[in-house]
Length: 309
Ligand code: C5P
Image 1 (cartoon, protein in one colour):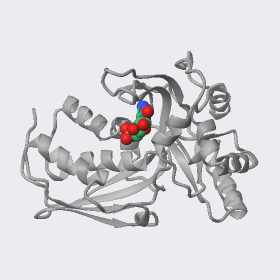
Image 2: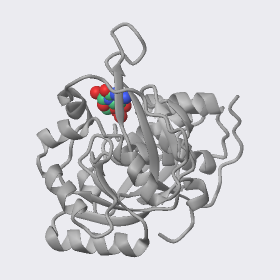
Image 3: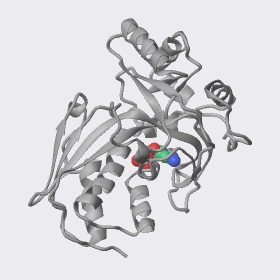
Image 4: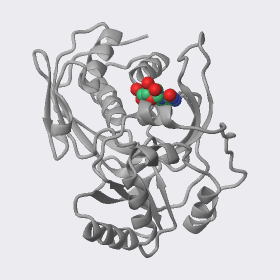
C-alpha cells in the first residue's frame, strides 16, 4: 500500500554514493523468452565509497532538474534523464503529481562503472519519498528500482552485499574490515552494453566466502582469488584501463587493483587513509588528466550519511 501525506516544506538532501564491485563474476545469460532476456546473471561483492553525487529536492509547482558540478556537462538535462524518470515513476506509483525542483551536483564521472546514474536514481527515490512524505510499499519500490536499471536496487539498499540474479537478488556481504580506496577513471566513458557484448569465454561460478577476512590484508588476498569478469573486455575497448591498473599497483601500500563494474573506473585497496592519500597524489602526479579520488570503503551508506568525507 502507498500512503501519501502532506509534502515536506524543507529542502531534502541525499548523497548518491559511488558503488564499487570488489568482485564481479558473470555466471550466465538469460535465454530468450524469460524475464530480462539477454541480461547477464551476475555474482558480485558490492560496497560503496565515501564519495558521491549530491542531490537536493525542494518543493515546487512542477518537475525540474538543474545540473551542477564537475561532470554536469557530461549529462544531458533531457527528458529521459534517469533522475527525471525516477521522479515521474515514483509519483505514478504513489498516485501523486511529480512536483519538485531537483538539483544534481555531479561529482562522479558518467558511464564509469561506479553506478553514478543508478546511485542518482536511488537517491531520487529516497529523497522524493521524504519530500513527498510517501512510504511506498517496499516490494513495489524494489520492482521500480530494478526497472530503472540493474544497479539501482543495490544503490537503494545502500549496504555492502553480494548481488546475484541480474542485480536484483541481494544477500548481506560477509563482515568486512575498515579499508580505503583510491578511485581512478581515465575520463573515457564506457557504455555497459558494449562491455557485456565484448565479453568472451566461459561463465564463472558464484563465489561464496566461508569465513570473514581477518583484516584488510586478508581481504585483499581473498579478493585476489576472485575477478572482475568484465575487465578484459573493457581493456580491449579502452586500453588505457590497463595503464590505470598498473599505475595503481605501483603505489606504495596498494593491496589490490581492479576495475569496478563495466569500467572504466578502477580502484586500489589500501589499509589506511594516509596510504590512500599518498597513492592518489602519486597517480595524479603521473597523469593529471585522470580523475583520481581517495575515499573510505563504506559498508552502510545510511550510517555514513552526514559524516565528513
Ligand atoms: O540495467 P542497465 O540499464 O544498467 O543495463 C545496461 C545494459 O547492460 C543492459 O542493456 C545490458 O546490455 C547490460 N547488462 C547485462 N546484464 C546485467 C546488467 C546489465 O547484460 N545484469
